[in-house]
Structures are given as structure tokens and as C-alpha cells.
Length: 97
Image (tube, rainbow, N blue to C red; front, side, top):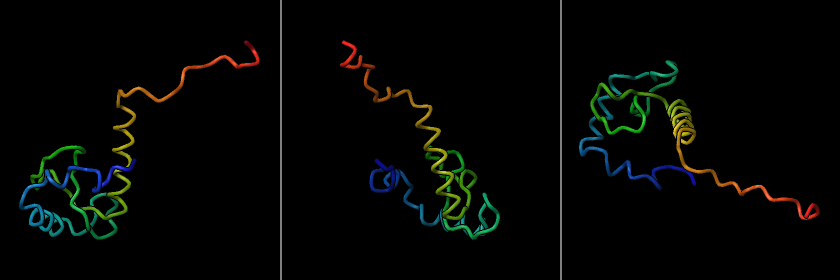
């Protein structure tokens, strides 16, 4: 299952003044802080999985860089997760019984 705005509670955790903060970040960082080429369109949390909404904790980035960064962070989170993997125990082949 994909983790996106439809399955996330992140939107409810954003501060009431999020639109104003986002606008400030995009004004401060008109060019993507990651690639340095494309215009910033996203106010990104520098440290992943935090609710630190201070201007110092946010950076402007373009959508492609934000998607890549988010995908890397999600993959790292899944790899570090201690959830048991869904693997069936090895079974002896029926012809060998």
C-alpha cells in the first residue's frame, strides 16, 4: 500500500499557518536546495518523519527531487523496521516425503 496524503495523518499534524510557512520557504528558497536547478515548489522537512515546522527545519525543493528524497527515506525506514517478513517456513517437497 502506498503511503500518501490519502493514507497519511500528516496533513492533520501541520500547523494552522502552514500555507504562510510554505510561502515563506518558497520565497526564501526560489531554487531547489537539492538539485539547484529547478524552481522550488515544495516546502520539505529537512529531517524526515518529524513535525518540526520551524523555518530552519524546512527547505524549498522541486517536486522531482522531493519525490526521490521521500522514496529514499521511506525505503530506509522500511529497511530499518523490525517487522517480521512475510515468508512461509521452508517445506519439504512432497516428492521427497
